[in-house]
Length: 283
Figure 1 (tube, rainbow, N blue to C red):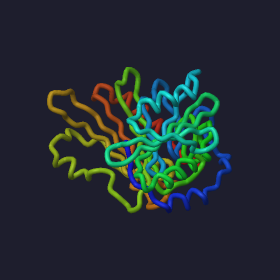
Figure 2 (figure 1 turned 90 degrees about the horizontal axis):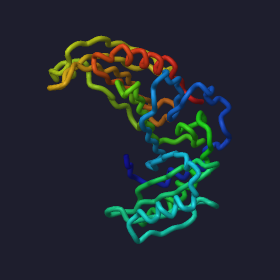
Figure 3 (figure 1 turned 90 degrees about the vertical axis):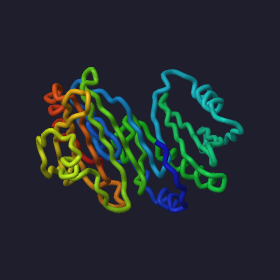
């Protein structure tokens, strides 16, 4: 996932963000993703996650005892020359390197053995803007989830007008998956096909459920279907979608998908109900 676009308005928004941590983080039993917290069902594992603020990709990982300086040297060595290195903030290294017709700008913030990687596309003319943006994100980085924009084990304590979060959960032996995705929008968009469109595709075998359902205080549409893929067993797909409110980080567009072979339907439905039933907004 690589997002493009630099804009000076970003810096104005960053400078106006409050940096005081929220006092309403999730209890320990919960996990969080983006602007939401949920209770993970027993046996579900997090397979992957992706996050971005203002077109800047964010990744959190434990260093596992590795030397941060050596980790950064290896990252620099992997980039195509010429590489220019600098400090994004005191003790926070950054670099730019060629990438097609533009540049990549990267940074590494380390706290208590946990790394925050930042990656963004930019151009030579906008490097200074990109550096200020990354420095603003670094300034608002803190360990522990549940504050503002949650990255799982860490948070960025700011609100933005351009952010995405994606999380994939898998059941035992990856028998089924549940995907959560949220994204701020500038105008309302339809996040799912209409039922008539799906039926017209010819792949839908049966409509199990079609209803309005409120999740995390958001009015969305829930649909359960069985469908066929040539040469594969019958499958089940569960969806819930909220179109989102324009320019709102607290009410972004949200899509949740569950997939499983029909033989694993019971396990998927049980996990689905716990995830959707426990999902709540972070404030």
